[in-house]
Image (cartoon, rainbow over all chains, first blue to last red; front, side):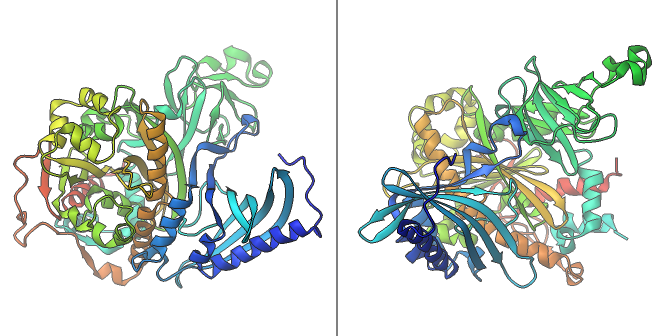
Length: 173
Length: 443
């Protein structure tokens, strides 16, 4: 998929994209979801296909028509609104999460938008008796330059498990 | 040592020894007495539409290839090579004319028959020494389909599937036969939760009582079409054959088409429903005024039908999900959750209904998120010593003299027994079948 070469790591566009992803992770770890929503474009598509185990020659390893997420801004706002109620039990008490963002590469090959690829490791700990969960994923983002700085226009999350080992996705990746 | 007869007699009174949700001995009994006999769902025919298509699914530890062979016949084969026992298929889905064991290359057609093995002449003496033609992967002991749903039983003497489904087949049509085209399934999303498999199955069988509290947040944010979750108590709870489920009370005065429009079905789909469903099925909606919602077919296949608001304009769109509670251990369950939609539905409806599903159920669903938190917590508590001293009260809807708090509905159009209002009738119906299995000797 990636024939293009990434921008040099010293390129201001790469630095801006990298900083965007790290700042975004800080908002998510702080559960500042209202702040997180402000980083999203109105026309965002936030997608996380279901990964499947297939033969090497099958030509696909994710489902084209089923995701864990396939969200527009309305759906994401509803999720955030729900977490802000007094009745979102699955996150009350809240999980302790850490979004580790690494392997960031930035490409300028999608028109005006920057394409940023990153690796994400989400650590999620709940309560005091359960083992913590890990979710490992790659992400391909389109970042759009706006008057307010970069904004997320599209995110495709390529999760590295076919069977998720976490009780739900009441978290964002 | 497990005293099953004592446990079962408590369960039959609606008093559930709490440890059954976290006890390895109970889990072994379920494996040997229940899953060794019962019809269990594996896949839907729409997941393998073309010759060679296959999916791999389990019944507990047993892996099966569900394939459509070259003649278009659905086959269910035990995924273990006849020679040394390797899995012959290690992918979970795909298309293949043959399955070749990676170990010594014994190769099977997609109907299970052994097609070839290396050095047949030199190593086995050819057909005279080892008749290849008589060899095939083990078939599922019993296999049958209904509305495209593929079930197997590990018991070769299982009753006919249609006889097993009994009166629940009436309700199954609302989820899996809205038109002659039937449903198509997408997915499943799969995830593992640290919860006992029975809890989800019981919940979907009849727990309308949890909705007002567990799902308060989806009412708060206006995702739920109904303004108050307490509306749940107006719904009817039914039990029929091996299934049980919940319904919502529809607004008064509407005819069949009005009620389907109320839950968001477009006019393009309503004539097919009117033609496909029987007069009695239509009457459940039009005359009794109930719309099916959650249900469980014993032991571990559940259904949900709900109708959230999917956009800022308040567009109400229904969705259907099938879900399986696949036991991993007494403390862990793999959930498989499919989106289901009428195969003949307009593309725009399919798109919106898929959105409705993702917002509500499955790995990220806003209803399901809070359900699983509850179930994990119950399982955690059930594993300890004190849980052996506690019988959970599952007697809602029964008086201390074992009489129903309210009589069954007299005017309910569906078969079986139905009650209006809150009560753990469906859960006790499910637990009664669980008890029947656990009381029988292991197969």
